[in-house]
Length: 409
Image 1 (cartoon, rainbow, N blue to C red):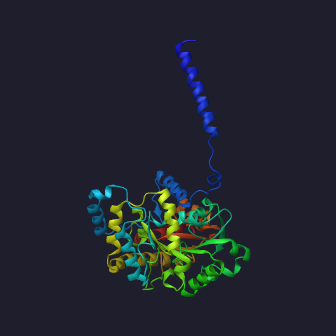
Image 2: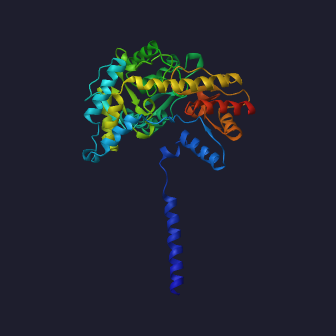
Image 3: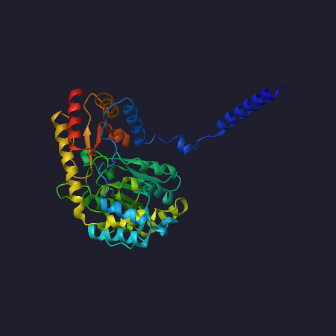
């Protein structure tokens, strides 16, 4: 056989061997059964639309279009030049950062926290929420997850081998779980419960009495409450949402997660924190020390600047979202789409027209009006019949979106 023939034979052999090797590489069962991440799927649909030349009005993902305040950016620029920040960061977060977090909590909510044992830095609150079940949930344990709700609650539970029990958030109950509807055997197996107020996607607020009800349930059945409080600083008409940790006994049963993403328009910076029960913070920290190396300290230093900023800087931001909310809400009402006017978050939760379901309406908007929104059932079965609009584009584009919808509904 010629040299050329030998090379061809070898190439064929190794090519077949490579194919055979590929056949043996299988995804883990936990990944095989993982649904496509909702916002990744939406991103792909948006890219397809833009590739076709569609002038897309993007009201889908909660990613603020307003830049991070300039003084925070400048703080990062200065901090990034410091050689001490070019090495590995501390796992639990710089002392200065955790002190800024606990100082902000006391000024904002009147909650006293120990920066050493009751605060932990996170690479964005999503990361901490996803990792929390790994610290406390064993195979077969139950985690109570709101539906509709942030998909990471249930996904993190699945990764930990737990069983997500979905608590429907119904309009008739003010989008708060009906704890009396949860079976006794489920409650006895519960290790963790996720709550999220102000709520994504419904924008609902939670009352003091409802938080107390959750604390009493956690005490009775000995489980942890994880309150996702990412949207407490985006509110309207002076109705400042409370912290779960303000209530007596809350710190005995739970923790609160927060992020600088929405408050200071820092989604891309990936920094947040968990605060509350010291044992829970310790458990989450133990997971993190084995899986990540902390947050770049220059980002932490800039976050200290953000957290020490006077709250007055946020007033224009809230006013911007209020104007957008009003433009979209009034516009939807004028074309017969029913929605609740939100008092917090930058989302508007609307009912889809009768001839559509959530997904078909989202596709209809994208294909026929160039509007991207998030189908409610993507947040869980209880979100069917709704669609979520994010207030992340200007007032004029909001009005244009309504005009486009008017022509196709």
